[in-house]
Length: 302
Image (cartoon, rainbow, N blue to C red; front, top):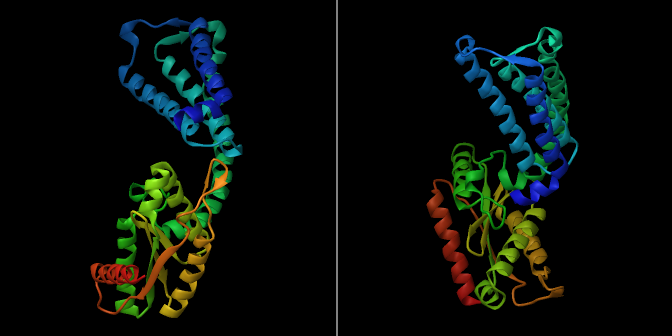
């Protein structure tokens, strides 16, 4: 991933590799080195640390963001800020010549320009984030904790869902707000994995996760539960409505045809699914045990 972002922002990396040595060369060639005794090392540490952190932010921006207006504004804003901080740091070691006092006055100017660019970047980033928040609603449910993310499906793991179920159980006990949970299990996934390999099987899991995500309501939450199982939380929903929602989701998954080398492949195009409604006084472990047991019984009878 990092290599791809190096290629993606190749021109920006080149600009960064030019402006830093150019700034250093400009300062050195127009100033005189101070004596060791006059250097304030406390200032050096503080200003050098700020310069280093702005450079770190620059690198992190290029390694983590795709191309776009926000990325360009962040890059040039942070670059201008870094130039000012770098000049401020070098100023602790070099005294500008009398003929080049303009450099001392110029130190703060790039930072001012950088802050203007960063302000525009923050505005457009806010707009971008609003769109992303809407898209992630059925994956995050107003709470973001990427340490609980499943890397294969891109959804949150079972631990995240358990936290959300605990919250809904509290709402059920105190405010009588009903909710339902559904499990969706891919049929014959083990056979598919054995036939087509782990890479294709992981791709299928990612596909199924996205299909479920796209076909749920905005208020619902889906997570990867275990192996080939996905779990769906449907707040403020009775069992009849929950079954209608999951039935539609299961139909969409069943119509999915994975591809290998351009040709559609079969052997895994259907799911088992089951919905249960939470009961007052029930614990999270209890409701999960109940739905797993019922789904396993359903699979055995099929």
